[in-house]
Length: 302
Image 1 (cartoon, one colour):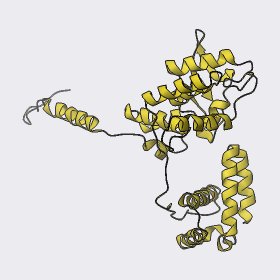
Image 2: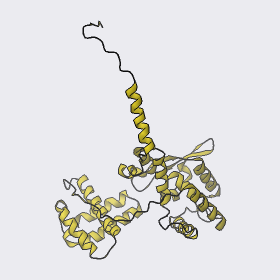
Image 3: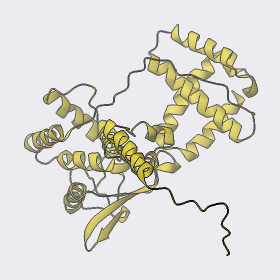
Image 4: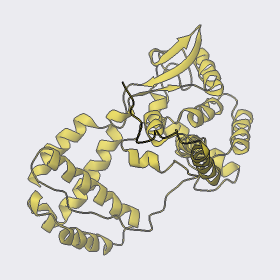
């Protein structure tokens, strides 16, 4: 409980507003469990964590809700370790069965979505924003906060965008643009009457994350798409496509701005064709003739 004030001050200065809100909310839940709130940081052990889990489950909350608290506790203890307040962080396992939305939006579906929104809401910016998100992997807040100064141009054409502030220090990155993303960005720049790229009605104010999220739900429901298809699916689609194309985890991390390489690793696929190609390469190396050996009775002068 005494550590909480210092921790929140650190998180407020080093995380995005929504991330800070997440940690603050879940820290308040952790503080409601008196044995944990009154415990010394170095005395938090697996047994105490398990007791907290059982106490939380008795409140009839969802698995994902309990896991949010565990993620917050784990993050807090890792920071305490970085500050040398404790030596080690106890093992902490998330509860199984947490529902994850991992829908990939394929090209035919994306085309139908953009065509539907362009016809139903001609003045909406969403038919430009959706393909841009799929081809850049930007978080919706990152896209909403893009400015003209964040775009790199070559001969008058946009070639990349820079994220200058984000969820973590890893969020700062530069993403090259596909032809489709560049076209979407160019169209939105022409419509904007301010420094922002993706603007609302009038073109003077940047979009807030609320409008794209709500509009996406309208599109999904109108087209009877799976309920697991959410706006974040555009980012998941971006990473999945990179993985399917053979991109390595480190490159995916740099492009997506993941805080951990473990997140990026999930998108790296080792398909059968890649495995067979690797074995064929070994075969080629094995078939190369070994260099001739020099007889041991010969003396070579150097």
